[in-house]
Length: 349
Image 1 (cartoon, helix red, strand yellow):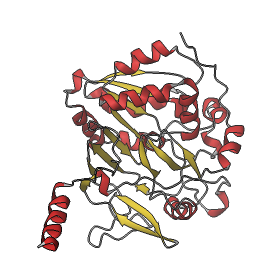
Image 2 (cartoon, one colour):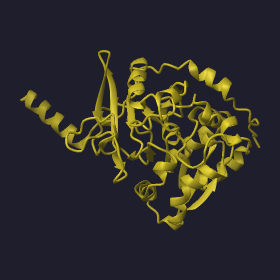
Image 3 (cartoon, helix red, strand yellow):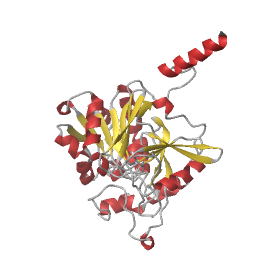
Image 4 (cartoon, one colour):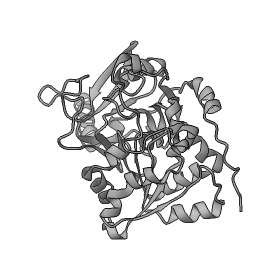
């Protein structure tokens, strides 16, 4: 009888998704809301993602204020326009908080963040953006907004920043402040660099693991299915990174895919008609992008990376997990030297 009771309890627990009193949820707040897209301007230019952001607020578009944080692209107006145009066209009010070369007071930052229904972080250089926010104390205000139920969103760097860390192109010199503000980086396409036309044109920079804001556990790889200007497929390099950071859960988000979290539930959102890494019939991984966009979950077991296609929807706690330890990537310190935050110090009045 005891065994039958235990078995019945386990089945009910699984059905109702009951956690042990000692089990900490991966969702920091019951009203947590976010959409994390695999690309910046490309992804946020797709109607499915703009509509998902609006739906998460529970408001009509004309009643929504979107706060754009363009720190990862050094507050360039061109990137702000590309990443917010669809939301603006739907009637959302767009405001921005520029902190790359400015230092608003704490009161100014509090006021603008409290006014926002949505906080949209730009694609671009993740490490620079997260470092700058922490230096200004903006990270703490963003956490308060998250706990209030403000929708957090963004693509590429704007997806990585909300998690523990990410597989990042922050060491790509084309993403550095001097290159971006000098006009060396084009403003036509996405914030991520394009694949070289041939092997000889490949650049020599490396992907690194960057620390982020740690609102959610996980190591995020945006643009999971593409190859950038260094000629190295991100999916392959991400697997190698997972072996160096084996206690973390990896989240590979294809260029045209997104992961939405609403309370304790998640769902995968993808742009129709776009290429991706998921073969439609077999659900196998396609390194040549001959499938549809998707999200992959990676875990290291016995020294091997296991990649699993993320189900279309489910419970967040079945997807994410807290790492036993987080290993810092020493290359972050070199990256900070090469792309320093030379903006003004914070104002506490």
